Length: 131
Image (cartoon, rainbow, N blue to C red; front, side, top):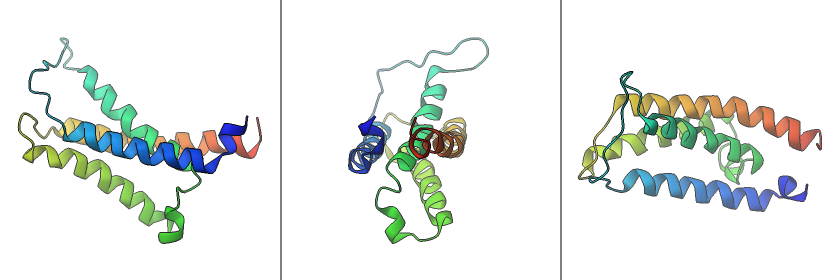
């Protein structure tokens, strides 16, 4: 599968995904009513988790997306990802029709952290072992 090994394509997808997440978190959805069942779980909670879990997965497939040249230490990249997850939720304080939700913030961060493990696993399985 040639697409798995194409770093440029994955880098483009990675940056497009980041831009898409940023745009989605910057838009107002004042007319949308959030569905909530009796347990208090909302479907957008799952969306937050998945959107941010995909970021590190794409980062692994993009083989660093050019950021490893700038940030030699992997911890800086981890902190940069966490900062993105936090800032995209905090910016909603300032967007009309949106509000900060601590559950969303926890799910953003949790999705990002779980995505690191998923991305590392998938990258090692699919790319390094050439399956």
